[in-house]
Image (cartoon, rainbow, N blue to C red; front, side, top):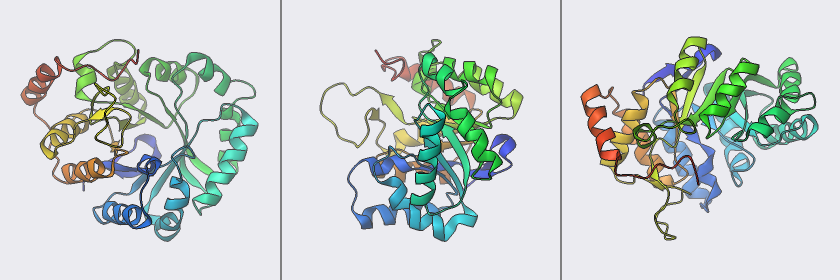
Length: 284
């Protein structure tokens, strides 16, 4: 699988990041282990996890311990204050069976007020900077579904990475709260690594029925996933996080192995098709 430089981190990440969100939903030990082994065997070398992803940290711990030298390990904290975040970091390190994280990210900062708290005097950022001085973390990132909030954050702190939704349905319905292009443009200028999420999101579920283990409706055939992922990987991104649905995640890895840049004409055709879809963001 192709690898790309993750901004100024210096790491070359695989086109797909193994998303720990797959463990939010019930998976047997064998199903989980088989998926992790499959991903690693296909060349995935970037792992993204969070304490809120079910028992993901526990499930991934033995794999991290065994393959630590070959993996870029990214974790997140949804805590907003210094003390809470410091405590959570220690617990994450224990569960993941490692003594450091390659990347620690402010998780889900969609709200402007929460961003101000996180970057304030007693905010989580101070815990991150202290952890970096102690060699507990190497790099600091931010994740958000709201591109406007990421731009605000980048005015205050020089983050190493950003993680945000990048997909063709959003691109076909641009507005300030879902337009990722300004973030990608600034990231390229500042050499910030970009991790894409929701690359295969079609939109909100149209009914209460769910056919996949995702809170949004995903594209779920190999052909659809090929198109959606290849569009995302043809933008200024380094890697795309795999889906929380294990079958969709496997198809994403399959698609990434066969990736070639999507021609602009094909991208325009996809965008025309997406005009009939309802975008996932902004959520109303």
